[in-house]
Amino acid sequence: MKGYMSTFFVLLFHLACTSQTIRNEVQIAFMADVHFADVYPEFEDLNPDVYTDTVYGKNVLIRSMESQLHSTRLFNENYFAFQAALDDAVRRGIKIIAMPGDFSDDGQPVHIKGLKKIMNRYAEEYNVSFFMVNGNHDPTRPFGKQSGERDFLSIHGRLQPIMSTKGLYTSSTIAEEPTVIAKEIAEWGYKEILEELKAYGFFPQQKFRYWETPFSTYDYEGYTFKKAELASKLDNRISSNATLKTIPDVSYLVER
Image (cartoon, rainbow, N blue to C red; front, side, top):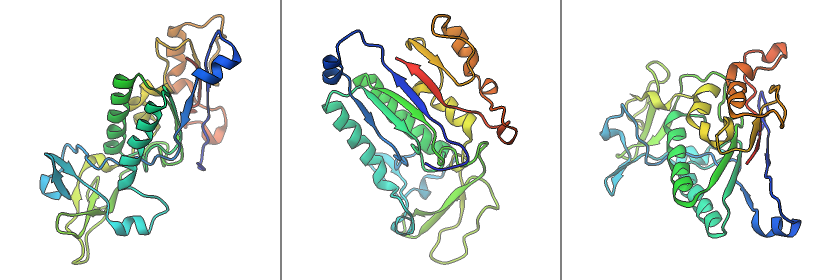
């Protein structure tokens, strides 16, 4: 996870028990570089004719094989691989999932929302706690940008470009469908990603025993949830480094 800014987090678990009990009872699954892409996306502004297929009443939209052959990572399979990994963790009795970066491919709203939906389900059904930090793919830029992909697979087997705004890309060959516009294929920045996934470590929760950022001024003895809420505001998480003065530091420490 290389990029313009590194983020780290620490999970501390306050357990009044022996080291033997810790070995037996506390397990953490680390799932890095998930690069989640929702193959059953819920676009608000996409014509149903654009989807690759419809299966069991759900619209399917996948990337072409060409896109994966020319990439360093998979796209479509990650949707199923991520849930298979979660199912394996649940079978093992693991209740804490750490996701240290690149949980999305490019911080696109449609995929971040799909990821959140899956995590919400596992949190509700299996009492799983997720703790996340950003990688260089979430976001790719601090404040996001208009974007899209030219290589989704159309129902006709051709490439289907989908862009977040007009003018980014124009289909130019007979091997491609006409470019369509869907705003949720843009790329989010820090603020939008953190707000969407705020329940998963980025912001304090009442249930946490303790939560802080590198800029917090309180100590353990003086901790209150209200103080943590104030410290968690992104305006209060800005580095004093002149070159990074507008980029929030979203690292945190949490005691569960």
